[in-house]
Length: 156
Image 1 (tube, rainbow, N blue to C red):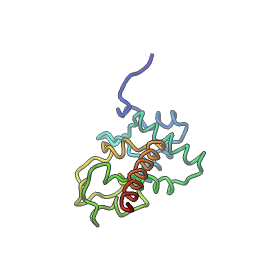
Image 2: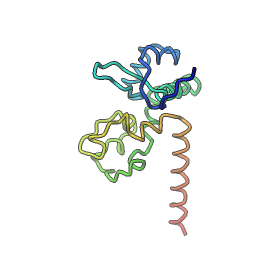
Image 3: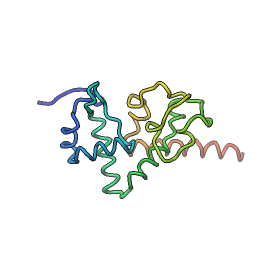
Image 4: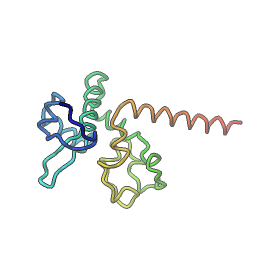
């Protein structure tokens, strides 16, 4: 019997998610504390995970174990995602930590007095769409192409 539900639907309690990923509950909580993961929290504070969350953790685990990149390295990679461009945010001033920081992903920063102040980071397209290493690489490649074209145009 195959269960069909949206990949973003939070359905797995933390203990089940840990078993599916073959990690400890402590590891999932650490990833949350480090800003790599935002689990859904019920009003009772119980954490629930979706298929997308499971895929995100699998990517994180592969990056740590196979690529030998540390948690701080992963946070830096996530911080390089140009959320201001993806969101169409024109507030790239001193008020935007995501624009100015390079050590934490945008979803783990305080959003005070900027475009993301009242937004739920778990529902943000940057968090939802950029948890996969391949997607991040593709976005960086696209940006490289755009900037290369811009640089070539300025020299002609």
